[in-house]
Amino acid sequence: DTEVTQTPKHLVMGMTNKKSLKCEQHMGHRAMYWYKQKAKKPPELMFVYSYEKLSINESVPSRFSPECPNSSLLNLHLHALQPEDSALYLCASSGRDRGTDTQYFGPGTRLTVL
Amino acid sequence: GNSVTQMEGPVTLSEEAFLTINCTYTATGYPSLFWYVQYPGEGLQLLLKATKADDKGSNKGFEATYRKETTSFHLEKGSVQVSDSAVYFCALTNDPGNQFYFGTGTSLTVIP
Image (cartoon, rainbow over all chains, first blue to last red; front, top):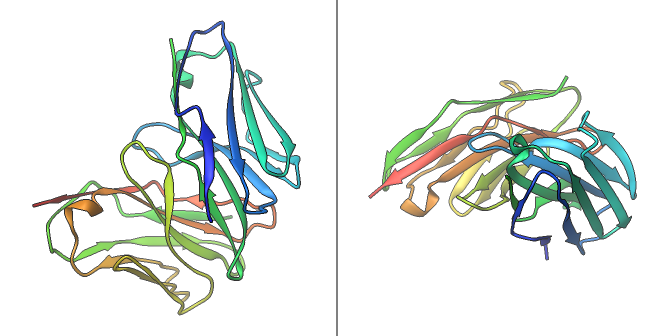
């Protein structure tokens, strides 16, 4: 099973709201990722967790706050977002698969900030 | 550093036409190479991969061969279908920090 799940599928929020995106994988992967994707663009890396510790933060604004409660779960807490933060947010995990690190993506959360 | 360059799109083909999407890379060491496909409104799905020089990855009629001498990993399919319409991303990893590097994506539309 190479499934990464994400909830919710869609989210609409105002600029003063606080919300969270959730991601889960049960492949035993030790690396988990958050990406932001705008229309017709490649995924843009935001955060990487390796063995439940934040290893990469690509200078993401503090209104995005990641959390990795355990090796299967990854959250992204959202607060005071701007309309330009509207995008598809993708979670991914990676692990060894037939000899090479391979990344698997969830279906994404479509976020709209009003 | 690591980077991936893909051919610019969009690409429009008739059903049953031959597809090539070019991908070249720059990397230190010996990267693993991937093609991902993204259908409208969905996440990225792994299409195929190759881990060393001259390896051929294949899946669903798509193929790509890891060419170290030309630092390329071109995606091919002999006969495309309407259902292949999607955006295709070439990617690599060789990073012990678990980072993956993506090309800009190539949008493919197949018309009946």
